[in-house]
Length: 256
Ligand SMILES: NC(=O)c1ccc[n+]([C@@H]2O[C@H](COP(=O)([O-])OP(=O)(O)OC[C@H]3O[C@@H](n4cnc5c(N)ncnc54)[C@H](OP(=O)(O)O)[C@@H]3O)[C@@H](O)[C@H]2O)c1
Image (cartoon, rainbow, N blue to C red; front, side, top):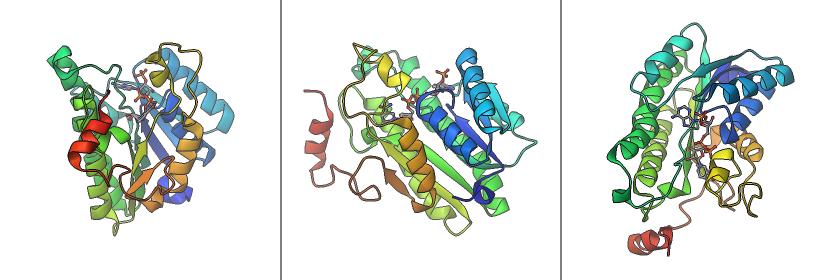
């Protein structure tokens, strides 16, 4: 990855901890200035300060809830005076796994707003600028939950499938326009959001991916889209459930 292809500024939507903070560090290490978006101001400021100190790049922090309807307008305002050559949409996890009807409708709609509407709006805004310039990159962080439906993950999985298909489609449209798009498919990764879901938050179970390795690998393979499956023996290959019928895949994705 050359900074001239993807700089001089990058935006990480959900950039204060976990995979997003790892992306921010890996981008800063490549000399890219950053706009980091997240809700919790202390965590955001701490990450921004640490990255400034570690890498000497400019870092703006933008406290914003990406599930709010005016999020893109605020993000566009905060980046109007800089050239954004790399956009990473990371924020996307679900904070609980529950049956569809056991969750409030408003809760489902917040996930859709952040993971579908917000992703689309940002892709349209930054994509138009990148295509006009003839260079840039976008990473959409998605999940193995996108491969098939499954009980207790209806809305989360559906939003992740939206991100996957949107990213792959934009890759196909912009591949001749100098803009690289990558759908990054993650399995379980050791982040604060994942740990909050564990009964024992102090000890990570074995086999979790390391956010720093995830981000490093994704940036290295940003030009190898449309899809990169972290941790797969064939990261550019097909769905690991591809050999199953849709019915068996959905049963495999559902808790027993
Ligand atoms: N961790 C895993 O095991 C795993 C597995 C598969 C896929 N993924 C995918 O990887 C991505 C990152 O996951 P993650 O575990 O690091 O957790 P995450 O909760 O998706 O991301 C955490 C970051 O996003 C910010 N954020 C969350 N909701 C936000 C909102 N509404 N508005 C603004 N910022 C928001 C958080 O800061 P604030 O909380 O302060 O806002 C933090 O900076 C997600 O897209 C997820 O679907 C993760």
